Length: 110
Length: 113
Image (cartoon, helix red, strand yellow):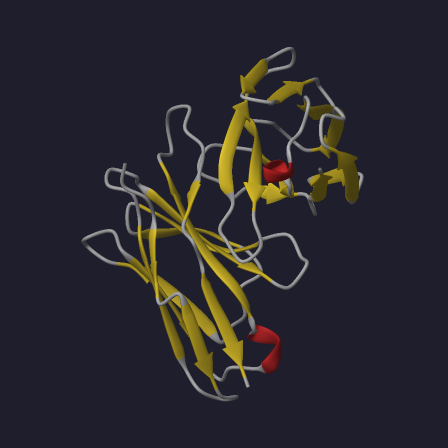
């Protein structure tokens, strides 16, 4: 069964304290791995898509990396506005639905 | 840039009533997905459409149905509503080919009382 597991479930950081979120996956095939940010009561906001092991993408304080078994979302010097739930999802084949992990809720305090 | 439009944003219904949620995908996106997200839960896939034909089915109850129309907008019809149907319902659209992520709408919050 295709499965996505995210850890930790919750993460509290001080402003400027860098850390990483983990997404491990067990799937029958991988067309792409997606990272989303979701604020309470809002739709997931697209951050990154990664397609092959070794790929890295960056956006402001966020950097996503991918290996054959997992992906990391590195947050460098986070700010309070980075507080949100970060969702990881995989797509097994083109056109199929994304399979989501349960998310990591990040809280950054000043 | 155009985004995925969902309506209504909020909906309150009584048990056993019917609800219809609408989704307008990004222009030229050929695939639409519906997801249900309960409080504190990850999004659960319900159903998808590719070029107006149902392409995949997830954990959608038999009480729910959906379709995609000629203008590519999609509607999720929910009948005999139950308290447990209270959730956020998201629509997402994408292009089947190409390296594009899914774009989600802002969702419809359905409350069944």
